[in-house]
Image (cartoon, rainbow, N blue to C red; front, side, top):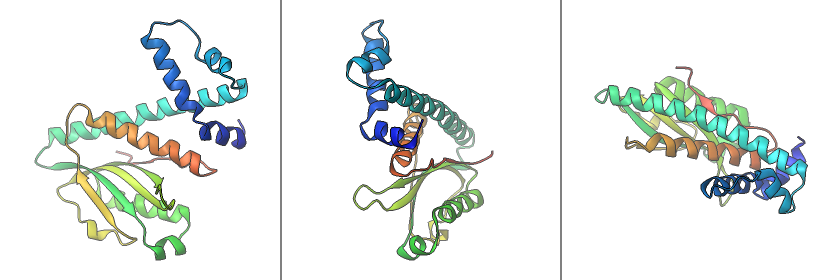
Amino acid sequence: MTDNIKERVLSIGLPKLLRQVSWSLYSNNIEDSVPLVAYDMGYSWEEISCAMKINSSYYKKLGRVKSKLVKMENDCLDNLNKFNMVFLTFTFNDYSLNHNNSDSLKQAVRRFLKKYCVRYVANVDYGATNGRKHFHAVALVDGKLNYKKWSYGALNGRKVNLNETAPKRMAKYVTKLSLHAIKETTGFNRLIYSRA
């Protein structure tokens, strides 16, 4: 799968369309093939194959992220007086963006999370208006997190309300950011995971 085909398939939204067609066929008990439906809609087999590979990767990643978040949530629930689950947004000031490359910014986020969080899942995102790079993370913290320790810009966070749908919502959001990162850049931006 070449980068040009992948970019084109992502830009036209074919993976999302295939997921919607698949769900529609499934929910209406129609035994038709999603690739055949997409082919009948005018997409080439090469585009359909590329979109199916992207969707396969999407669902695998969604499963991995969800299992990590469920484990974090369970640890948090088992130790309510010790751990908090938080959603974090790491932003960078102009100096940090201008004097660091993409890898060093990612490493700065990873070092911060590793130092101050018990477990975490993070990913890069780009602002809708100016395309400004920032990171989002879901993290399990021991007690309170001092947001002022982030020296590359601003760090904002909020506590995650734990209920049955929280891990699923967070997993979908982090995976969506990952797909967004693929579309916005030529390389694949991997998620940042804790080892624990």
